[in-house]
Length: 173
Image 1 (cartoon, one colour):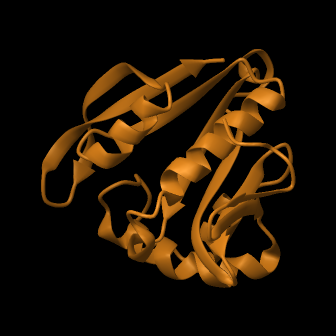
Image 2 (spheres, rainbow, N blue to C red):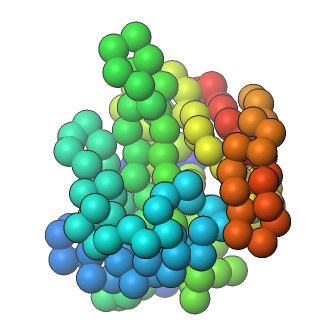
């Protein structure tokens, strides 16, 4: 796992807590990803205000960004998967600017979020909805120790592949 201090530097990229000003760098690629309808079960016409509220939830949630200088390359949110008796399991969501693919942004964010969750005392990480056709993400999460706990058949309506499965992925710390 990566160090979990305030700023993590990885070559020409750093991962840090997101600031309000980062939204201007997140929204353009988030809008593209959501509108494509291939990886998120969100309204493809999601408005900016709703998107911002979802991506900057209150504590104990955390929002981080991977940046190269002033450019946001990717972002992640993480927090408790459930309330009360389920709050010991974390969950997370990730978005990487498609123009930054192949730079290790997703891996760096994944390592950071997993390390932070473990340091925060969570006992496990659960991803609730990894689209099975998102093979790069599935391979990445497996390489970081996540396992497919279950696949919900036809739980996601992909715009070109039709009804495909959603993986629930899990990792104990």
